[in-house]
Image 1 (cartoon, one colour):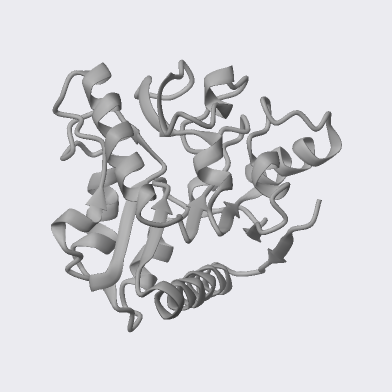
Image 2 (cartoon, rainbow, N blue to C red; image 1 turned 60 degrees about the vertical axis):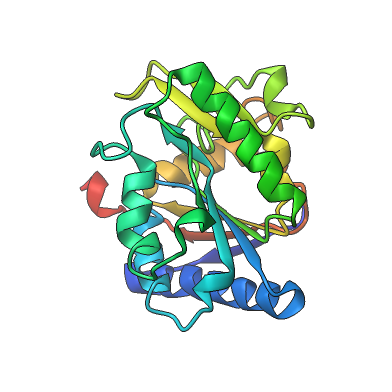
Length: 237
């Protein structure tokens, strides 16, 4: 597998490198097609990157953003990914309201998934995902694709799935599928802390099973960048 692993020593270096990759790829997409589509994960690791990105001179009026996954909670709930991304990026850059596509978690869960599926198919019919920013959990999950992944997670005709976890506080999730992620022009994995280092090592040394380690599908594209800071992150101390 070919991928670009960038290891940083400090939080500032980590944030600078991740932001630089994003800004560069957004600029390339805007120059090439006049528009850019981003797939963004929530969680504590990427949010500071989004805050820095919001300060960069980018033509946000031609950028579209959708969520890699969402927790099935109200959009204003403290655990909501769309709430966090609105606060760190969408609102600060005044992204046009219809340029932010997120699951409507006010709806019943099955309807929420179906509506998100339709919205993603419409968005992606107009152009590819230019950059997908993702993380990886200690158990190997990416987005809300929790191992072992179901067959539906790899189904090319599906964009969005309902998933479930007993490991985290919010058990019901909505997530995009593996094909949506691997079709991104530039998949980017952001990893911080010793627990993520342990997961990375287990993935690379163990059986190469994408159903157990969905990040392997991203690495297999040959277009993936991995930005890592292996020292303990603040949440681990």
